[in-house]
Amino acid sequence: MTNGKSTVTIHMGASLDGFIEKKDASVDWFNTSDSYPDGAPDPDVEAFLKTIGCYLMGSKTYELALRLGWIYGDTPTIVLTRRDLTTDRKTVEFYNGDLDLLLGRLREQYGSVWVAGGAQVAAELIRLKLADEISISILPILLGQGTRYFEYFQQEQHLHLKGATAYRNGVVEVRYEILK
Image (cartoon, rainbow, N blue to C red; front, top):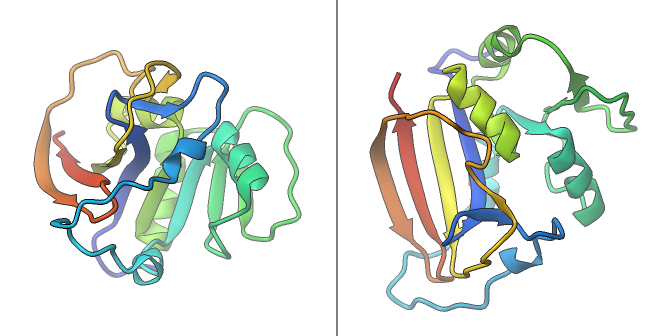
C-alpha cells in the first residue's frame, strides 16, 4: 500500500523520427554507441527501478520482453491482453477488463505505475485520462519506418514540459505532464 502520490507514467524508447520498433518489430537499435561528452552521467538505473511499484504493458511488449530476456525482475507486472496467455512468473498477472478499475487498484496498491509499452496501451491510457506523465527516451537514430510511438493516438492532448536531460550516450530523455 502506498502513502504518497500515485503516478502513472508512460515510458518508451523512440527513434528521433518517432518509431518504437522497426518494421520487422526488432529493437536492436536500442543499443547506442553514440557519445556526447557534455551529457549528464548515466542515471543510477538500479536505484530508479526500485521506485517503480509495478509495470503495465501490452501483450506484444510482454512477449518481446520474454524473447529479449526478462528485465523486470520480481516487480509486479500486469499484462493487458484479450488472448489466453500463460506464465510461470509469480509476479505476472494478465488482465482484460475495465482500465479505470485496474488503474485505481494499481495506484492504491503500488503508487508508481510504469507503463512499459506499447503504442496501443499508451494511446488508450491517454485517451481515458488515466496516465499522468509521458517519458520518452529519444535515441540517436532515424529509422524511417516501423511502429510510431503515437501511431494509435488520434486526438489533441496538451502537455507540460517537466524536464529534459541529455545523457553521455546520446540519449535524450524528455518528461511531460499530461494536462487533464
